[in-house]
Image (cartoon, rainbow over all chains, first blue to last red; front, side, top):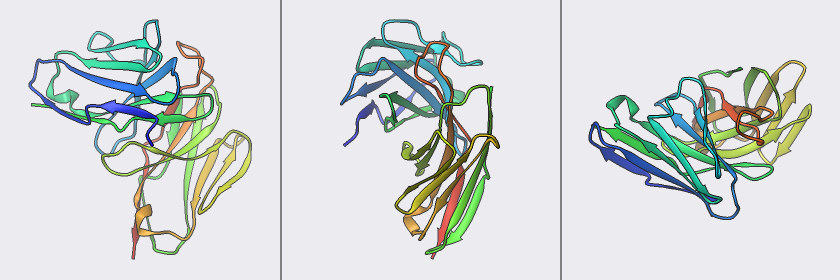
Length: 113
Length: 115
């Protein structure tokens, strides 16, 4: 079964609103989780590294005030897309790692209308 | 920085063998991964190489040459269900907020298997 659960799988929201995506590690404690974004026919682009109990580390070019990450526990990280715009429509995927392997959530298809 | 290159598309017929190449240039290397991704789904792990050589796993094998910055994924006895995108990913040494290395992905190779 899945070791990383991501919710929701699909969401449609109006432009200007905020959307929260949850990522949970089910079988292990993840002090670090990663958030990726994938546009159609493109690869996964690392957005940020989420660390339990501390601030997230963002990749160059990713707006930290727009993509808020909270990693409040060892099993949960959330990504909030604030003031969403149509260009934020994408496939968002989280990943949690144990010592050897990265496990991916099912992904969230965000559509901003 | 990371620069990972792989072909955009490949086609093959059922039962055949296909090799998907990946070249990379990284500022720090701590392993190379191959993932399979079907449209609209999350990637699934296929293989991992950190030392030079060939790793075999059933119908899938992956090769790594660190000195050449080169890897390939070999798929044997192709089946229709193998039609998917294959992602090459390089793990760095960590740092900048993570003691675990971060994974950086290539653009993916879309493989189409014909009957």
